Image (cartoon, rainbow, N blue to C red; front, side, top):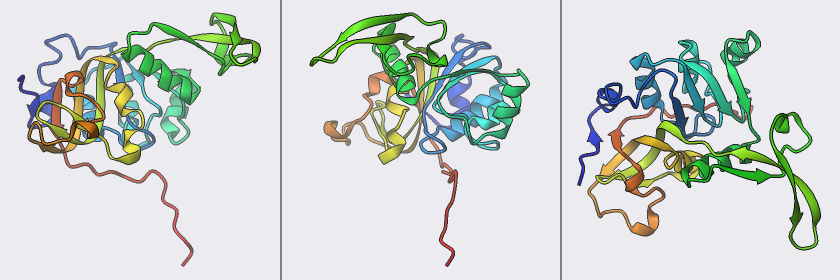
Length: 243
């Protein structure tokens, strides 16, 4: 069994530039939703490599001082393919000043583009976005909708497959089988299938065979490297009662 466990996030990245996996202009898939389930320590390590011109595929861009917001601070991200970026002032500033390319997607469409890329599906049709700016410049076709729905227009969206994916899980075994914790499951399982090389940041590593196969969310054959970290797990927005 290949050795997948690395002691630090830095060591997990250390030889990837020599292998031409980590490189300027690459596409990087990043799991998480808001600050929930983001590979926060891997993002810091990626920042420290100095790689630039990144096309980043992620639901959102973190906040100004955490998550992918750290890569926006250093202007290492050239383009964001995402569905929600409302919590990041630096993102807005760069976009409005034409310093950052943005490809907005309806959230379900983004999830399906990643899932399709991981499944080897180059493109698919969806009704979401038809008749809006989302469909501008894209191929559309009319299909017969099942169950007497008549004809309906659909827009073609491409699958997404990256050079590298960074994901966060609660638990991994030595082979890389992953278990996510509740809503931290979000985009992580799809991202883990949709890249040439995948690194998982985890809270706990257990011996191979100790995870019930029925509890595994991502099979280890998708995962190339594992790093155990202590995450801060920041809260994006905290609301408390007046009392």
